Length: 182
Image (tube, rainbow, N blue to C red; front, side, top):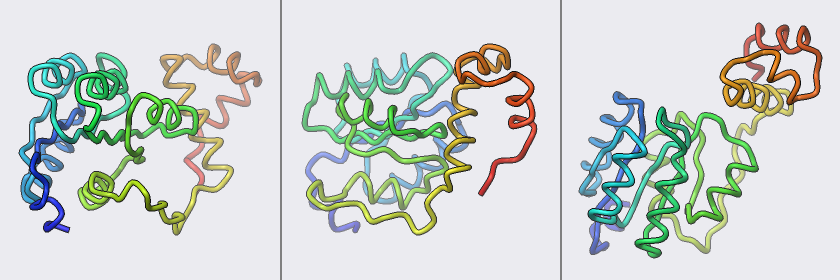
């Protein structure tokens, strides 16, 4: 696949993630694959970088301490429509995936995503369909992920989460106390 990168004229890549060790590892891995990498740890830095020098590629975390990574994707789409952005998230669900695509993201990957998966997504043929996952999440796992996401969005407030999910608070507490299903 390195031949694909070598054939590209513009190999600029913006990485936006607040997980510094992950950001550094991914940055080094993408540099070894031929990209000119710029890293940012906040939405503010990412937006400034996009406005200063719009990259050809971007990998943006969905949730950062100072906001939503989709703001960076949207700005990149506005200033450089030909750019290819990938959204990474630990809180994947269908609604956010659809929103990411509407705002200009090319693909949407669940964390933890390794450098090979990110590289493949960045250079994927837009006309090819993604292969089905070998080990898709079970319905129980999808439910658990949704509950965790709502819980995080409610700032870890059990009562507010239970109200929004229309479930009893004690039931929610039991679910939150358990490990994630496989």
